[in-house]
Amino acid sequence: MTSKPTFADAVTFRQLGNVDLQAVASVQLKSWRGTYAGVLPDEYLGAPMASDITRRWSTGLTPLDALWGAVDDAGTLLGFAAVRLGKAPYLDNLHVLVEARGSGVSYRLMAHVADALARIGACDLWLTVVERNLRARAFYNRLGGREGEAKADEMFGNAVVSLPVYWSDLTELSKNARQVVSPLDGGEAGT
Image: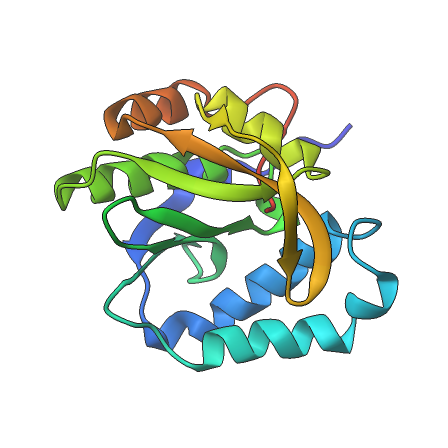
C-alpha cells in the first residue's frame, strides 16, 4: 500500500498575482475534469472547458480579486483559492491537484484564506457548490460551513443545481481547518 505524499509540511502559502494565472488555469482545469466528470456534459469536459477556463484567467486580476496558492518546494502550484472581495467575501474557486488531495493542503489553504481575510477586516465568507459535488460539500461541512437552499444555477452555460455555503466567523473557520488537517478519509475539495 502506498502512502499519500505529505505535501502539507513542505508547502508555502502565498498571495498569487497575474504572473501565476497560467498555473492557476492549469490547476483548475485538472481539478474540474476530475470533479465534474458525470456532472457536466462529457463534450464540455474537453476543449470547451479548457477554452472557458483559459478565458476566465487570461483577463487578469481586478482590485476585487484576492488569490492565494499552495506552492511546493519545486515551485509547483498544488492548489489555489480565489476570493471576490466585498462586504461579504465570496470564495469563487478552491482547487487542489488530485495528487495533493488527502495531504491536508486544502485545509491549510482554507485556514490561510480565513486568516488573510480576517487581517483585512472581513468577518465572514461564502461560496456556492454544485449539489452533486459531495466530496466538496463534505469538506466544507467539516470546516463548519452552513449550507443554504439548493437552486438552479449554471457553470459556463451548463445547467447545474448549486447551494450556498456560509461561514459567519473567519476565526472559527481557521480553527476548524487547522484541526482537520490530514483527514483519515482523504476528502479534499475540488470544487
